[in-house]
Image (cartoon, rainbow over all chains, first blue to last red; front, side):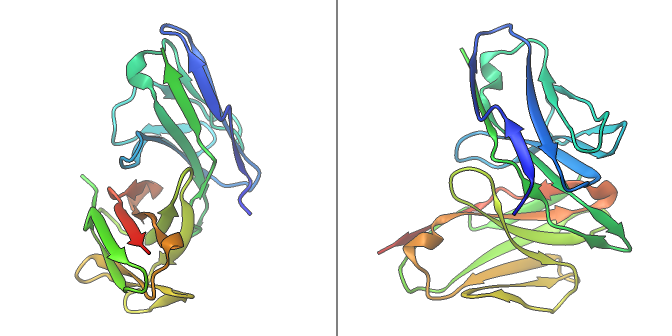
Length: 116
Length: 110
């Protein structure tokens, strides 16, 4: 069973608020990812991290920011939420063991964000 | 730019049919290809493929990778209504980025 957790599961907030979506994993994985997914649509990579103090932007431009101060924690922050940020946000982690070896990515249950 | 393309985007079949889902990719420094099933919330892992020509099997599901032609297929035999879901293909590429395809929405009618 995957040990990766996202909080909150659901969030409804007003425009202009600052929010942080939490993601934690207890598997010691180096790689962590944030994906954005609208209902019925594809997953878009918005941020990823190779390890502590490393963060990269993904393929989909996002106004959010991330940090990776600890291996197990990869929070995503929106400084000023807008209705266009309404979506589901999925966090994932994986491990790279070198020489082409990888684990599959484990996903959290997602945070469904609604900005009104 | 890394790209993963799945086809078809949507498929409707009857219970008992066999389906084949396709995934082609163009990525820099391919590492592995993964298949996931997504029903309501988070994707759940099905297979990871790293080597060409070796079939992975789990019950009625099987998958194979062709690294020369840059594609993978996912087969589901004797489909059941519980197989209805979006099936996602993802590739681990250079710098360990995990890139997903658009997904194939599979609907199994009784």
